[in-house]
Image (cartoon, rainbow, N blue to C red):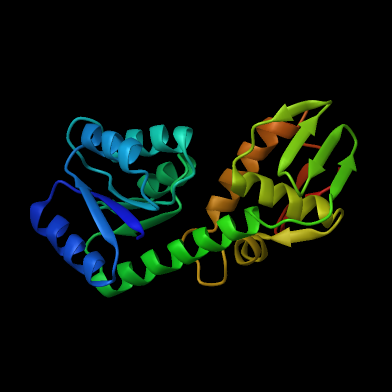
Length: 231
């Protein structure tokens, strides 16, 4: 059974989310502060985390940062403030989606279903077998079968989404992709989140594959369009 961890210190909302998720057939674990959230995520290993920003002990931003460092679990952040800076910070820390209170439970459930479908598709794709498919460009070696990337012979630690992004761009060398095209290819056409999540993943990827991340020569920005892989 798919498990969702709900981290929310507002009791009424916590119970409403638990009720709605259990009606959808999910197993639900709950936490009311940041420390409980981390302990639950580590012990239960949920398929999705719904994470409030304003929490006792550790706030949601710090919990998101730690979880993202430890795993690729999808994270949906909730906030009552709705300020632009909060949304940007959440995306920078690796949140997959962002919902501002008050929100419709029906819409949130739709987002939950979409996120879990995308996660399941990604996991299924990771397990596919087939002929060895290795793409080499400069000192980069991208092995699509084993999902291993090496730079100068040294293995890089890429998250699954970073690997997918690099593979998409590298296999379409010299083609410019818009953010929306990248979102549709990698996150799916039903993705509700902010297109700036693409910018965040590009930045993370550049830090790993570029000789000088602040002066990228492999993944270049096409002003007014998006991104292109030049090798």
